[in-house]
Image (cartoon, rainbow, N blue to C red; front, side, top):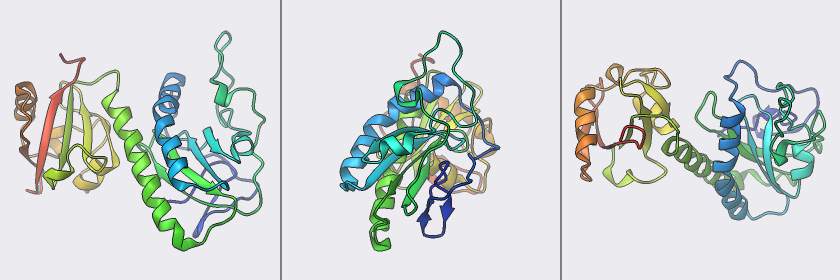
Length: 264
């Protein structure tokens, strides 16, 4: 179970407890303004549904960038949580460009009540962002297991939207050990360029192919025994029936491949 690492929401073994003196996460790629706006827009439906499912007036659902700066907050504590969300670690918006309303004209740091717990899940790590929530009432830990499942599912849905709607890409690959998982938030999803290098991959894909360092810039040939030209061939045929995809360890997956609009 991941703990929150938003500024002002430091990690702790029992969730996220608030304290002062915390700094944003560093050493991670910084997304462009267009990528951040796209993340906020595509994450909005999943955030609203997560807030509805958590169903507590003391909960605030939060979306952060890869540096830990809060981009959007939903809930009773949204105003307090969003203070300081004007891009900690990022400069002001260029002249003539107005930042999104959810991040505009905010003070330098959030003010956080002294007792909060929460859960967070990464979105397309390391540079994608983070989704999570904080609970001002410090709910019992036996409730956090269910809440964690909701957060993980919401984060996977956001990953799917980001990959499926990416403005660039050549081939979209879906795969899993179990055919029934294809088409659900539990499937592995990866976007490739024409040469077979990974542009984007969700956490499920990275976990299934471990220890292969599957991620941005890695060639399909480094992880899959199935030849790249064969994968492209399946995609070009537009078949709905899954084909067998094999990794370098000999493990088999049910897979579906499709050419993106850019490739078409």
